[in-house]
Length: 174
Image (cartoon, rainbow, N blue to C red; front, side, top):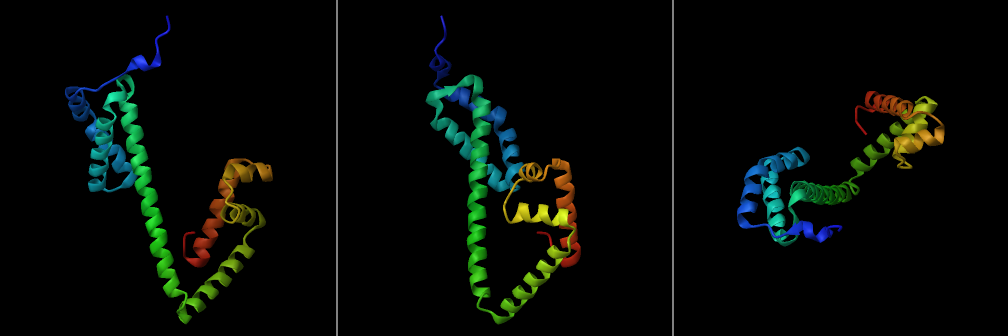
């Protein structure tokens, strides 16, 4: 007789939870730390991960609890990074709005844009095409390779060369 999938699920006891916490907290914290790069944040998110485990203790598959914890930790890390990215974009847009009314900023922006266009125009055609497809059309290297009938490695080399030219000419990373 086939075992029902729900038979694998059971309630996690407090002592089982404590043992899982003792065994896995450090590795979950380290996993998060490598994603977010901040020890205090990693501690907080690791604790949040175990809170979510406790909240879901009534429907846990004990065989996959470790994978469940890593999934929670990964999702919490991604959510945090997305929030930070959104906050950064907001702050950057507010700063830009203030700068856009500054005549000096407008002049420097126009000069930079013209210089960037000259640098892109002076790139070898293959580099320029790959750079523009990636940065303007937002295509992945695989998609560019398919369009141009080249290998992904060739696309990577062309993009690397394009970025090197921009770094050398403008002194910035794009």
